[in-house]
Image 1 (tube, rainbow, N blue to C red):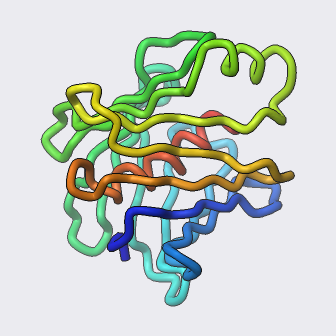
Image 2: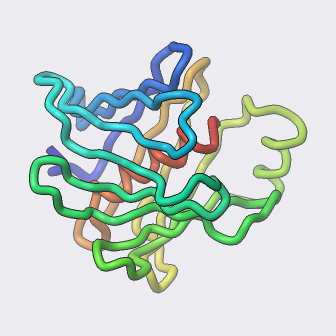
Length: 179
């Protein structure tokens, strides 16, 4: 698991947010976000065994300032966190924090005109984010395909950013944005 540089995330039709993460053609993780929680808390499980692999928990009740800690459930190792950047209606930015809390990278929405169109005109416009390292250099992308439920590809340079942080981070962003 997490040996590839390309992943696909598919959201399942459900009252709550449910996701399946694929590595190649193989489903590797499944996740379900519980609705109506004061603090976000959801788990990503091994798709085949149901064993918990990652847990994600918000560090505060307020969504705007929350950091979403990502922990490897098998080792109890902190993979990192996702934290919303400065709020902007026009273009969303999220910081990817490493295990020590330092900025390891960012996930940045594609362009201001497209972002504004998504918010004001229609949410049917597929979203697109670039993944940057701490220096602002591109190290991957999150690209949605048009479908009734979210379906997107996460491409990541495994040598320059932890794919667990990028992929689980993309799922967290989708869940909190309710894209």
